[in-house]
Image (cartoon, rainbow, N blue to C red; front, side):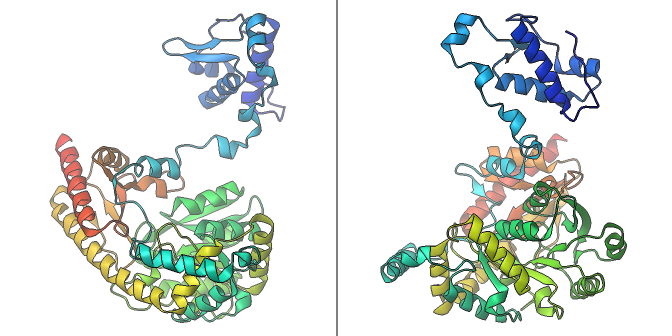
Length: 489
């Protein structure tokens, strides 16, 4: 089999390989049942990466020209003319491997894959970053019925692109409790934080642009940047949040379009950005005319600090784009987020809503507006704060019991996450794998490193969702796993 790679062509190497093999098969040069070279052998022959050959063979499998057999390898399965007439002709099939963008096709195991693997089924969740089920079902049911009866559903199709007007008024009043003063033209309602980041990036960035982000960081942040064709520069996080000591040289070298920071009880570390570093970020933003995208979902669940001044509240130059999500403090499964920013950016976000979304969770907007206006939302947050603090203390007590094994952590002063270091020699992914078999879901630390170069001996633990008795059981099981694996070293 004589294959050649033309490096002067813009056609991807894998497609050149697949196309040449396809032509040989159709021409009869490679008979049905013939065995193709192994991935490694063909890669060595053509001087390409093995993944290139894997992708070429996958393309041929999609065309139903080859099949892989255990213990044999890749086998030609073009068949006879009679067999071709009995089934759809593979040459008429869309080649999905060829037309799907590489960045969506050639993904390693993603955060979602790992999250689902460690969260599906009836496991005790020490991974799910959502609010507890603290609202009574009967109460929600009655309120939903009331909203539907009052509205007749018509406003669902007439809701402004910026969001329901009553909700926006109530959210602005809520944000004033956080020291943020804004007008109606500076607030956009969206479905969730991920959508907010996506729309902000769409509005501000062009392919190839650079942004500065924290590390470790939620995978949702770096993935949306990558899929937009943009670059990120990571800055480490310590107990006081994003390290700002060498930030200015990075700004001068890379000219980022914005700086992303999760300012309060950061995901995954649970750390809070210190006042000194908040001031430093605002100084750099003003000096270099760079926006700051501030995510602040955890700030309402503060256990030790009292009210925390957000970057947005401290910002005198209108440089901060503030994202607040209700995912940790409202009803599980009902998601809303708001963006507070310069009205020019808000208009661009509203325009994106008008062309991409028919309605932004209209019933959720009405329900949240109702609970904000009658004060129930504030009462429920106080209840969640007390409950979550108790759950945090219980989880930390369990981790303290494991300190003799080498488990360590920094006790978060708020939020819902504990960043837990495993004993030396234990890999977080391995612990998560073993824990999920014992019915407990946790998230391994490596998924929070965009370049997959850190966090290998960490777990992110969450205490927000499960009731106390399940958290206790979950921690008992997790510590047994850690103890067993430590003894096996």
